[in-house]
Structures are given as C-alpha cells and as structure tokens.
Image (cartoon, rainbow, N blue to C red; front, side, top):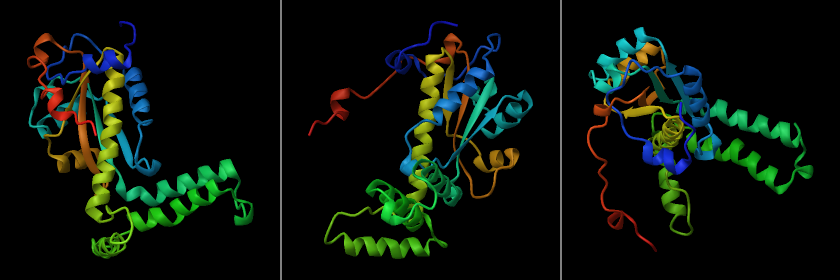
Length: 245
C-alpha cells in the first residue's frame, strides 16, 4: 500500500470505479476505519441520523448485486457500505446530546447555575429539535409551515419544518458522511463507487432494516482495474458554476 494521500491528492485520485480487480484484496479493518472517519462528518444539529452497514460477506454482496440492477460496480465489489438514514431515531439522538451535556456541564444543573451556552444548548435539544422533528402524518408539519410563513413576514426564520424538509436534511447529512468515507478510502489508495440505482426496499428487507429507515446510497469498494474508470473526468467549466458575490 502506498503512503496515505493528502486531502487534495485524495480528491483528485477519487473516481467512480465500476470494475474492481478481484485479485487485489482490500483490508476490512481499513474500510472500517474509513467508516469511522465517515461518522466524523458534519451533520445537522449533530443529530447523526445515520447508520452504516459494512457488507463483507460475499454471499450478501451476491444477493445485493441484482438489487443494484447488476451494475458492474456491485457485481465486482469486494465490499459494500450501505449508508442508511434513521430520521426515526431523532428522539434517541436528541437524548444522547443532552446526556453529553450532562457529562460536560453536570446533570440536573439548576438553571440559575447554567451558563448561557448551556441554557441555549439544552433549550435547543429539549424544545427546538422536538418542534422541528415531531410530526403526525405530515399534519403538524403543515401547521408549522403556516406558522413560519406568518412569522417570516416580520423577521428571518428557519422555514424547512415540514416532514419532507426534515427528510431532505437527514439525507443531506448522510451524504456528507458518504463523501467523508469515499475520500478516506481514496487516501488509503482504495476505490469506491456511490450507487443510487437500486431497489432500496429489497435491500432493506435483506438487511432486516426497520420500515422507517431509508437507504441513502450504497458504496461499492475495491481496487480499480484500468477499465473500471469509464473515461476521462468531465466537469462543467468552473467559471460557469463559480459565482463570487
């Protein structure tokens, strides 16, 4: 294995690899380390509404490949990582953040002795997060949306409060974790391919995932064959997408 790459080197090295060399193995402990680094990704409100399923069993990979429509990236993969959104765990994650505050500030700290930082943080996870995530069949989200419309006439306000909005938030942050993972793998000289084309319901059933969970993406892992990179990298000219204000 070559020396670990810098961030810039990893970014330029990373390509979506669709054919892996099965004569070159990858170390699952290194892949696990890269998944651990994925969990350090920035995420909305530090709620960490994600789970990572590291698939090392060849039997399971062979079962998942047809659910990824037999893409070469899935069929030739040595390992897979399934990035799963768990928006349904928001209460548990909010409680974990409050417990972290107990460990840092002290449990049952009376308000008179709380710093302004502690008061804001406890109010955030105790009141604001439940306001943002609590919903019932989308009905509460509709009323929250109307409320933000009215308040927004008079001052700036956070407007993404509907059930669909919070789902997008959870998927965005899970995507950040996936990017952390792929760059970590590239730094190790390993290759990946993020796959959105899949039958997520069948994959959830195969992995025994709860109904409320959602597959964000599946990332295949291995060592590239030269033909596994389908041509030169193409990007829209930077001048077209870069806007300085």
